[in-house]
Length: 248
Image 1: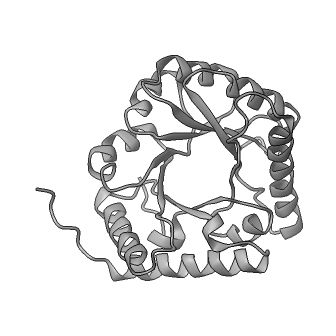
Image 2: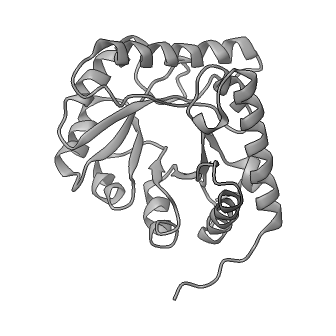
C-alpha cells in the first residue's frame, strides 16, 4: 500500500494561483483555458513535494472536471529515474525537459512518456531505435539565439522536424523552446511567435508524421502570459508552484 500523501496547503494555493493566471491569459488571448496544459518543472524537488502537488491537482480536477491534470517534467535523467517509481504512478505523464545525453537514452526511456528536448537527428535516431513503445517527442528550438541555451537553429528546425517525424517509434508532437532572458517583453514574444510559425509551417506541409505536431511547450513561471498570448499549449512552471528552488 502506498503511504498517504501529506497535504501541503502552500503548494495547493500556489498551484491554484497558477491555474488562475493561465485561465486569465488564455481568455485575454481569445483562447480556452483548457487549451493550455500546466507542466510542473520539478528539478531538485523531492518526490514528496511533487506528490503533494499532484494530490492537490487531483483534488482540484475532481472538484472541477473541466480542468486538465498537470504534467510532470524533469530536467535531469538521474532525477527522472530516482523519482520515477514514486511519482510515475501518480503522474498523468512524465516529460524530460532537459538535455538528453546519448549514454542516458535507455534510462530516460524507462520513465519518460515524452522527450521535449530533441535538438538534432542523432538523439532522435537513438530514441527511435530503442523505444519499447511509441514515444512522444518535441523538437527544441533556440529561438533567442543565446549561446547558453540548447536547441536547433530556427532556420534548421523545420527540416529536423520532418526527419524526426519520419522515424519509427516516435510521434512528433510539436516544438519546445526556452524564451529569451530579457526584460523586453516584445523580444520574448517575438521568439514565441517564431516558434508558433515554425509549428504552423510543419503542420501545413502535410508531410508524413506531422499531423500531431500541435504542441508548443514555451513559457515558464515568469513569462507564461506572454507565451500563452503567442499560442503556448504547455507552460512549464516550477517556482510559481514550489517556491524557490532548492540548491544542490
